[in-house]
Image 1 (tube, helix red, strand yellow):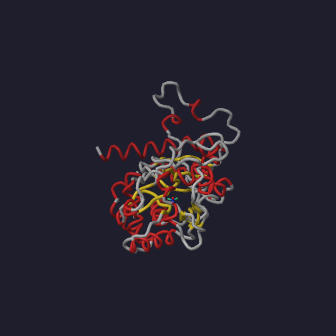
Image 2 (cartoon, rainbow, N blue to C red):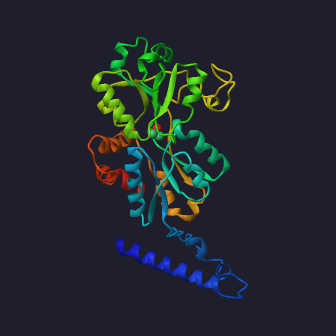
Image 3 (cartoon, rainbow, N blue to C red):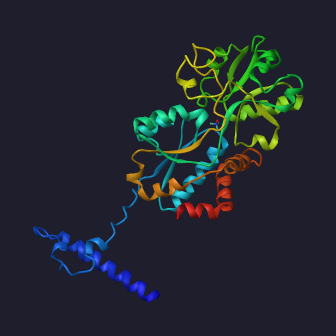
Length: 344
Ligand code: TMO
């Protein structure tokens, strides 16, 4: 049986070569197939599948952003692409502008597109046709204002946003002029916190942390003293494994809330609502990707991260203190069966 298959494969190969040679004949008006007698069961051309297109040898450009699951995860994505024979290049990139970069051909693949933070920037380029919405992970995401649970002891009515606002003064800092301080993430993440504070007429100022680490340092310091604090946080993340806490419940999110000022509680501002509670996590590629790296593209479309994957990648770095590359290796080893199925 095995030998028969091999012989058949050889025959097919020979037929393909013969067909290819035939069609190479210069000035031969009749293609090889029409020369074949009508009684031939299968003409050479229909038996020969199109030769699989080879991937370009150019490196696939991948961004390094500024939160741990992404940084560890991109090395895992890169290692998978290398295993399929591609080469990759890692480039530090602004996490919002990266979608414009993809349009300009300066970036090829973003594997963690969070709806809350990047949904608008991503979909804008998808609508333009220069970025492809290539895969939706199973992971469901949420990104919003968040507090550690002990704050509920001093601020009744949480997690409701109006209850938070009634306690605003508790969240003041020496620089916040008596208002509460919301500590947001780096400026390339979620936009719109200032609009939200204004739109909902909250007694808060918005301060942006320079790094994710500055958020966790503020959380750590506040927790040690049980001081009220409200910061930007997200899930899946490592935080839920270390701290008990909740997201603030703002008015329910709708797409129009981001684009249509007249929508929502305040007819003059956008962002007078919370972020999506069940947000997507997507994978986007440059529109030229499928033609340039057809084989890699097949693998990329199979990639699928769960909440646990994203949380684990973050935990390996932020709790266990692993280097992102080592976290990627560990995650790849622990998930080898799934990853092999993606590669096919
Ligand atoms: C994009 N992020 C997960 C940090 O909110």
